[in-house]
Amino acid sequence: MEIETFNKYKFIKFQVDNVVILFSTASGGLDFNCHTDEGLVNVEKIKTHYNLQSIGYLNQIHSDLIFDFDGNIKDGDALITNKKNRAIGVFTADCVPVILVDTNKNVIAAIHSGWKGTNALIVSKTIKRMQETYGTLTKNIMAYIGPHIGGCCYEVSKELIEEFTSKDIYSNIKISYNNKLDLEKCIIAQLNERGIKEKNIKTTNACTSCSKEYELYSYRSSENNYGRMFSFVYLKDI
Image (tube, rainbow, N blue to C red):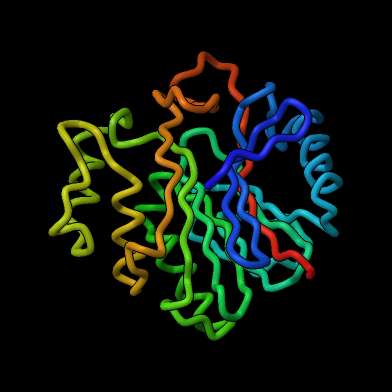
């Protein structure tokens, strides 16, 4: 993991072979709210700076809908592609961005996993789609978890915690403390259940609500005015 900068902006970067994974921060006021002109302009800046043919994203609806990227903007929360120089990404401001990389077949996925998506097992379902569509083997998957609101700060209702803890997948894992839910632990449980080992799971260890290491946007910690971060991945044509 390293910090990459261009202009006044900072990105948290991972790279494995020809695959580049980037998690934007709020440094320099960089905002990727795709419902604003500024956000769309910043998406184009990314496209130009990284010399990408296109950037794919979805109209996120907190679902478990998964698509193979075809250049169109659809309603859903996970994108998969094996095309080079085409980035795919998700927008977040507390929800969990998850990037999956099949290092053998060069297949990549970008997932938006808020509490609804996590509850619907969207990460697990995306892995299944990669297996069925691209022949991915879980032993070849690397997973990257970006900045999100952590179990240190994510207060939810008792009923929601009970809804999560009632699932068999979380029965032997402590995913909550008092009234706080740890979405990252839930997602790691999904990864583990699909056969992805701990050594192949990387996390930025950054809470959008309380982290001091990076400037980050947080829906919960802002007062009506907050931006979006963009987490994306692409295959370099080398």
